[in-house]
Length: 229
Image 1: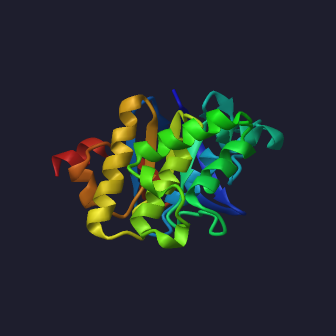
Image 2: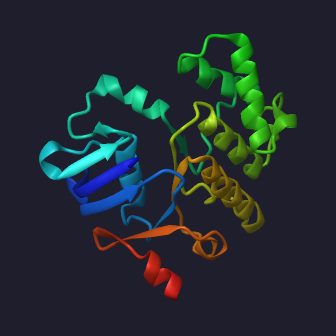
């Protein structure tokens, strides 16, 4: 299991955001987290990549990629993050360098040294997201959808076991959003799990997956309930 949360309390500072979270993710799963603004979706995702801490006495179990988050040391977080891809609503590309150099920067920062290997991997991920011809473009020369594709390519660089995507279609028009979710859904075919928060409820019909809902300080799985409706 990639994520195993049992009775996890999620805090933002001293404020309890989500109470007694039970949440699980496994290989190849496509998981939506839905809920109103401020319901705790982003906070939950942040615990998965240790942007928010899970306190030892506030969880029965909190494991991500085989690591116990209750006891994980700060110095161990980069290794954990290297095994996952993280995608943000606002892309977070480096605007002072080309697409190629954005991706090269990440690979070098995560320990890649061989120039030929770096070149090959960049070509692979850009091809995978349909952006092979954009490697020399600057981010500001790309549309929002193209920038999000580059962000997905960046998330794929280190062969992640799972991708955490926080509102990845939030700034995109409906057609582009559909293409992005299709791309994320396709990624699960290779075994990578995708966990995505979204307000884009029509996507749940187009691309069925496991559905969790954040509401009133709690989270519950509503896959069956949602599909019946």
